[in-house]
Length: 260
Ligand code: IPD
Ligand code: CA
Ligand code: CA
Image 1: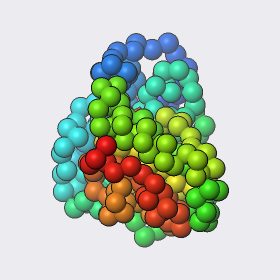
Image 2: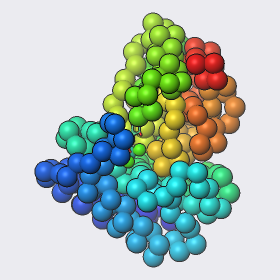
Image 3: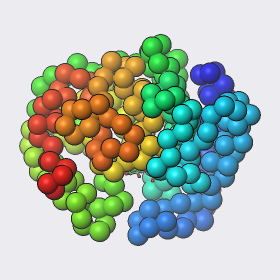
Image 4: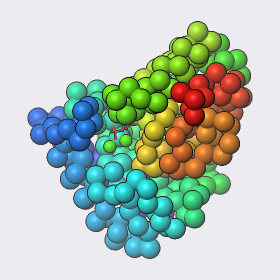
C-alpha cells in the first residue's frame, strides 16, 4: 500500500513543483482562503490515480469533497496543504493523503515536493521520512518545548475561533520556548513526528488537513487528542499533538473552547 501511495504522490509532485515555480491563477474561496488551478488539477489527477490503485476506497478531497463525510473506507486528500505558502513561494507546503478504515488511520503519506521530503506511516509499522525512521522528541518541560500552531480562516469573523486562538496563545506563549506558525497543518504534524517540534495545536481543522499527520505522530511515538485530552476524532474543533511527555501541560494552558 505504502509503495503505491509513494508512487502516486511522486507523480502528482511533478505537477505541484511546476505550479510552485509558475505564475498562478489565484481565486478566493473565502475572505483569505486561496485556491489555485493547481489545487484543483492535483486533486483531479490524484482522485483518478487513487481510484485505479484503491478502488474500494472513497476519496474525500478538499476541492471536491464534503468535510462532513466519513466513508467506512476513506482516503482524505489535501492536494496542497499550505496554499498561501504555495502562492507566495514559501517552501512549506505539501500534498497530504490519509487512508482510514472505520474511523481509524491505517496509512499516511505527506509529500513536500519543494524540499523533496516524503513522510509515510503505516499502522503498527512506524513512521518514516525519505526512508529514515522518525521518533518524537523527549522534551517533557513545557518551558523548553517548541510548539507550532495555525490560525484557521474562521478567525476573520472574530468569533469563537479568533478568541480561542488569542486566549490560548496568551496562556501558552510565556510558558514555552516559542511558538511557530509555518502555514501547513499536515507538515506541522510531520514535524512533531520528526521531533523538530515538541507539540502542535490548532482549531477548526478539516479531515484532509490532519488525516495523514495523526498517524505519523502516533507511529513516531507521540500522542494526539482533543483539547480536553480525550481521543481526537476527525471533525473535532481542536487538535493537540505532542511527544506525549508534555501533552497534559499543553492541554492545561489551552483556553476552554466551549467558553471562548
Ligand atoms: C491550511 C493550512 C494552515 C492552517 C489552516 C488550513 P490549506 O490548509 O493547513 O496551516 O492553519 O487552518 O486550512 O487551506 O492551505 O489547505
Ligand atoms: Ca489544508
Ligand atoms: Ca488545501
